[in-house]
Amino acid sequence: MGKNNKWFVLPAFLAIYIVWGSTYLAILIGLEGIPPFLLSSLRFLMAGAALYGYCHWKTKEAISVSSLRRNLQCGVLMLVGGVVSVTWAEQFLSSSMAAIIVAALPFWFVLLDKKQWAFYFSNRMLIPGLLLGCSGVILLLGHQRASTGIPLRGGMGMQLAGSLVIVLGGISWATGSLLSKYRPAKNSIIMNAALQFLSAGTVCQVISLAAGEWEKFDAARVPSQAWIALFYLVTMGSLLAYLSYLFLLRVRPPAQVSTYVYVNPVIALFLGAWLANESIRPFQVAALAIILTGVLLVNTVKYHAVGQKDKSQQL
Image (tube, rainbow, N blue to C red; front, side, top):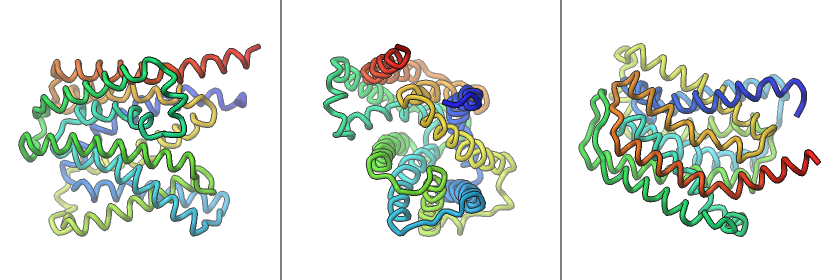
């Protein structure tokens, strides 16, 4: 790692810890005036256009058909499946509840990454960790209650549906991430991100039109805080935090970068209580503690491997 880069490491970690943790509340506020698929479409298209414009101005990269196809697949799986599932579900769930369910994401990577099974399952704590994490998710699903001061549509059934959609979205995110890892497109990381954002934004726009969101949407009636939330999601969530994540993957071990999973739900929990009048219920705290303990157990072998690598580099 270069001497200049080390000064960006701490700010980059703060970005993925705090900013990504705050996007759950930003989504909730954005939904006050903008329908979920339209909100997601605007977010992705604006972020994608900014990144694409930068890449075209800086490098003038050529884009092949195979690269466009691969980024379309990853964009749909990761952004439409992973991120939009949370946006849709937050119509019925509090931001803190959504963030806690997303904390189970590392489990899906372990279960779906067959190429690493021999490595993962060499950890004796993996199975207990998986079972513990699943029990935390089940605790949440079994205690669905509206815990936000912002009125939510639907009853218990829609809250349960929202929770299950986030779980499926986590599986979709993990699938797309593994596809990107093992069969990457040949463009630069920033161009790939731009194409994924643009692809996801286009798909969301089609869904929004099919769902009739545009017919009911009146931009003049959207409260100012919803527009501010959208701007925050574009600039901070989809640009600053995402680019910080890509930077950290280049200069830090992935196991260390993935620690954002432990911090995001805590940030979301307290921001929801502070700014959105969401109540922090004992079962939420208990479920969060159980899920994060399970994630730690599952990742023990990763952290041990990172520690061994660091020691060998010091010798």
